[in-house]
Amino acid sequence: MNSVLITGCSTGFGRETALYFLEKGWSVIATMRNPAASTLPASDRLRLLPLDVTDPDSIAAAVAEAGAIDILVNNAGIGWLNAVEGTPMETVREIFEANLFGAMAMMQAVLPGMRARRSGTIINVSSSSTYKPLPLLSVYRASKAAMTALTESAALELAEFGIRARVVLPGMAPSTAFAATAQGHIMEAGGFPEPYADFAQRTLAMMQSAGNGVVTTSRDVAEAIFRAATDPDCPAVLPAGADAIAWSKGE
Image (cartoon, rainbow, N blue to C red):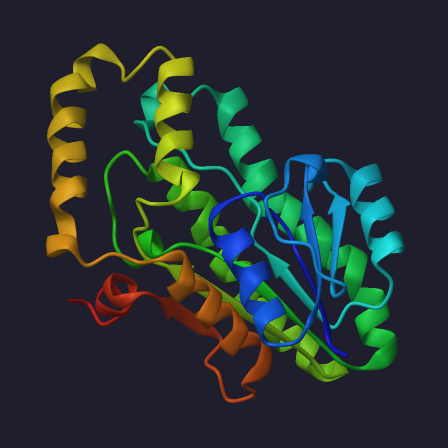
């Protein structure tokens, strides 16, 4: 039975992806910082493991406990919405630790086993915001653009060993925890810098009305991740959701 390890499964894309792989008969290792709080339904093909992708010891313990991993889905990350000037450098580092460096560390942890078996797939979850500039997403977008670049180059390195690397770029999904998390971080940072306040409110209103209601669902992302895991002809960079697909075409 094929196995998949998914990071960030407590909510949103990660949780829905775990459910989708279970529906397809896979063995799923769903990871999150606090498995006791998981709302995933019990299954004999589901294992819950604690994992903090910013903690090397946590990564080592989770990968050792998981055993052989056929598919790694790097989904864990945090949202951020603010101007560059309103983002403390400590926060910038936290965002990159969660959104990029944690994924790199997970890749390094599973690749020796995949390379020894000469098989495996790594799927990194980026963002369709990397297709075009968007205000107030500069730091978040930078972390996700780096994720896409990382995956594209890693794919060329890993093909030598029979390992595939793919990146999935979800569109705007207001039903996920991203918006709430981003807004929470804004409040923690004391709001937008005063000179940006009016601009920020106009930008948020524009974002809320963007796409005329065409947005990405968690199911869209789960389906794209599953395709990346199972379709050998899947493109290396795969948009997920109608708005992401439109953005990828420059629309």
